[in-house]
Length: 99
Image (cartoon, rainbow, N blue to C red):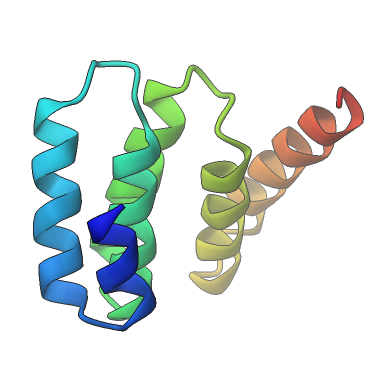
């Protein structure tokens, strides 16, 4: 919760440090911290780090992290990789249809 508060107030270094600590202590299937780390990286325009964190969140979730898939789609689109962007967009659309 504290990491999200720091993120909301744009205190990114503290937010990232707390999220990383949470990530290191969390069960192996807990992907929220990796997603938050990806959000923080995106806000800081650290796109390679954002890719890595969002991909890890997506992988940890077994493909069920819709938020991570959505952001991976956007990151791939912005980097010019339309094929990967479309893959993650289809994941998001499919998961949303199942709700």
